[in-house]
Structures are given as C-alpha cells and as structure tokens.
Length: 253
Ligand SMILES: Nc1ncnc2c1ncn2[C@@H]1O[C@H](COP(=O)(O)OP(=O)(O)OP(=O)(O)O)[C@@H](O)[C@H]1O
Ligand SMILES: [Mg+2]
Image (spheres, protein in one colour):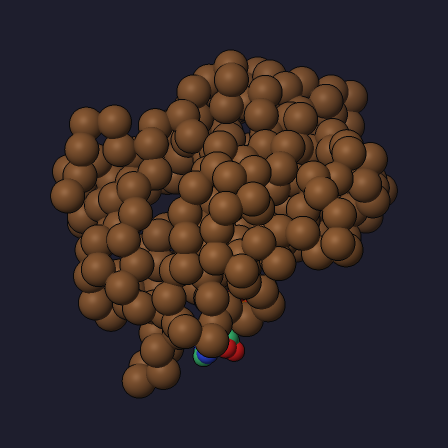
C-alpha cells in the first residue's frame, strides 16, 4: 500500500459508469515530484481515471489514497482545494471574467485574504506563466496557448501538492505546446509539485514524462507502466506501436 515517497496510491481500482466497467485492476503509485502520464487510445478511460483520482466520480471499487488519506475523505474537506489543482481540457475560463478575476476565483472562494493580497498573489502567478500585463484582458482577447497558461495559473493559485492536466496540448500548435511542456517542467523543478498528465501527444510524452501508464480499452487493463523510452523500446507490441506511431522514433522537439 502507500509508501513514504508516494504522493498518490491506487489500489485494485475499477473505473466504471454505473454497471459499465471501463477499466479494472489498476494498481500503481505516483511519487512525490514526479511527472506521471496516463496514455492510451481514445475512449480507453484516461479522463475517467483522472475524475476518479480527483474525486469527482466516486470510486466503484478499490482505493485512491493521497499519502495516508483516502480520496473520499480528502475531497469532502476544504483541504481538497489546497492539495489538488486541475487544468481541464478546455482551459475552462469564465468568459465574462478577466484573466485576473478568473485566476483569483479560488482565493476568493477558499480564503479570507484581502483584495490587495489576492491581487499580489494573482500578479505573481500570472508572472510565473508569462502573462504579466494581461490581468485585465478577457479570455476571448488572448490566444489558445495563453488561455491554457491562465488556466494553469488558476490551478496553481492555492499552491497545490499535485497538479492534474487533461490533454494540456489539445488544440495548440507544436510551438505553443512545447512552451506549455517547458512551463510544466519548470513548475515541477521549482516547486517540487507532483504532476499527472493525460495525453496522447508523442512529443510531450517523450519530453516531459518521467513515467507513463498505458491503458488498453480492449482488455480493460493497464498493459504497462514505465519510462516512456523504455516502454517504446521494450514493452508489449501494442504499447510499442502506440509510442512509435508514424513509424519513427522519439520525435525531435
Ligand atoms: N459520463 C459518462 N457516462 C457514461 N459513460 C461514459 C461517460 N464518460 C465517458 N464514458 C465512456 O467511458 C469510456 C472512457 O471514456 P474516457 O472519456 O475516460 O476516455 P478517454 O481515454 O479520456 O478518451 P479520449 O482520448 O477520447 O479523451 C468511453 O467508452 C466513454 O464512452
Ligand atoms: Mg479524455
């Protein structure tokens, strides 16, 4: 079960919607400060796993633990906001709020900080993601990559121990996607944040993943877990094929 260096432990987890099972027998640990990827074909259950990990879908069978705490206990408390930050696929910014107001939302909701302190923290987080000066812009006035970075600033505003991303590069051009990857790695290196990313972007998989978990829809099982380059070269044929799409090797980024 949970070990000291484990930020998140998954034990005998089944993913399901009602009676429909998506994935079974999941068993893995995510280490503190690790960039951990969840990969696999479309519809295999990556987003569903993320929802179970952050507690917005109840766990039908098995356990998800943060340190010694069960996810069900964590999510019912206020600590959830402090522990976990989430960047959803769409970025999910409120269109009628400015960038600064969007990033400030969790602080207004979860803390008693003064407006002045909130403004300072928002300015700091926006500077970290390269958006200083865009405080008063609305989401429709900035690019897709900037929206992702604003979403990241909001996910980080309460200094979470673990950050979750669902397809962070979706809809971004390769350059913006690489900038986002670089930013994610800098955040882990500077703050020691544990980072869990659902992705099927090969460039991201090889450039930022410490380890990856491969989910297979056909067998409803995780087929392998390990360093992306190791999986590409030594794993089961289905995993190797997924990681060498295009018949090439590790893409140059
Ligand atoms: N709210 C839901 N209710 C019932 N079934 C769902 C629901 N959401 C997803 N599913 C089903 O669960 C399975 C896994 O879906 P999920 O969205 O987790 O896959 P995914 O790996 O994230 O796919 P993609 O790469 O396309 O985002 C799919 O068969 C999907 O149709
Ligand atoms: Mg998905």
